[in-house]
Amino acid sequence: MIIVLERGAKPEQVDEVVASLRRDGIEVRCLRAAGKPALHVLAGETRRASRALEFDCVEGIFATSGPRVRREGQRFFPHHTLRWFAIWMVVVATLVLLAGQLPPGVGRPIDLQPPPEHVVVPWYGRAATGFLALFPHSAAWLAWSLLWIVMALFVALPRFERRSGVSRIPVLGAAALLVAAVAYLALGGVA
Amino acid sequence: MVTATDAGLLAIARRTLRAPISHELRGDLGMAVLLVALFLLQAFTGILLSLYYQPAPEAVAESMQFIMRDVSWGWLMRGLHHWVSTALIVVACVHLARALFGARYRGREWFWYLGALVLPLVVALAFTGELLAWDNQAYWTVREFLSDIETIPLIGPELADIVRGGSDVNASTLSRTWTAHALFAPWLVWMLLAANLALIVRDVRRAWGGGA
Image (cartoon, rainbow over all chains, first blue to last red; front, top):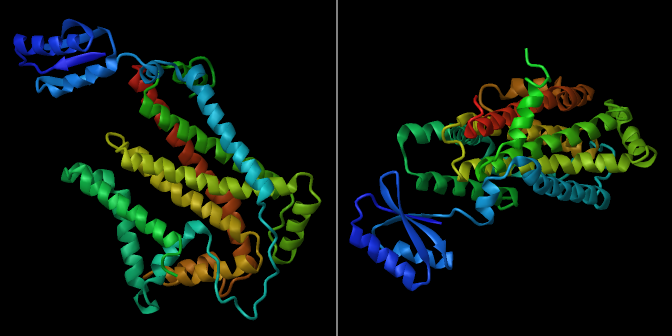
């Protein structure tokens, strides 16, 4: 683990951080990295080192070991391939199980008279049909226009975000709202 | 010309698979490969089903019964084809949601645009597949769908006529749905998925200094 301090950190501030870490039983070695003072944690409970963030002069703490860091340096093949292969196998096994337990049936022959009162739309089409159903037939043009505008904004999001320099928070808020609206309509919120 | 020699596709695949890979790119690569694998499974089961399926209104029900009852493992192939189409939509949604909420499109907008194209196409594939059953449910669903399409401003009626293949839902509609499902959309999806995977591989190689 490396604790990086701010570029302008004074020696006494560094000493203060080192003393605090030593009190927690953590051994460190002083370094300089890219012109900044840094502390290399050599021994002790590294989890406690996160307390160093309480000092204003500490810029950040970066892990140099641990399972996630070790995985970062591993080749995709064979290390990660095995993990992904296991995931794929679970997915395929689930699909085979579903296909065996819940196979699609063969429906009734076409009956033109009388037409069914309620047509069951597949789950992935329910959000769109639910949205269109919110508008009367005479205002269908408005529904389609809104749908196209939302879709265009959604697709052009990266370009829009880059050009306007807008913060991520409103973008994420709008995306979460869109996902919630789609889920609500898909689950039959509007019959 | 790119050849599958040591200096070509095999070398690229080997270097990509043997490169240490970051957490984010690993997720992207895994999801892209999962999408491709599901699509290949979908293509495989689809080809097997197409050997017995007859896209003519009077023969559809009989061919479906034949697949479900008489063809060895036909029920499983049809069930898999049905559920894999659902899984493809779910995985494509998750892929897109990862890009959206993780800002994965920054600096590589193609990733976003490809995902945004793949999702409606896999939905279209699933929807046309549902219609190919050509039972009462499918028939009335296609009628409802076409009446919605007709309300699109300016192009709606013409678009509905093209899909319908006439003034009413008939054998032409089934034939066109079959063409879209079995010939047109799969190739588009395949090209987009291959492009998606190829560009992620490029990013993996760039991240490890393997060049463009």
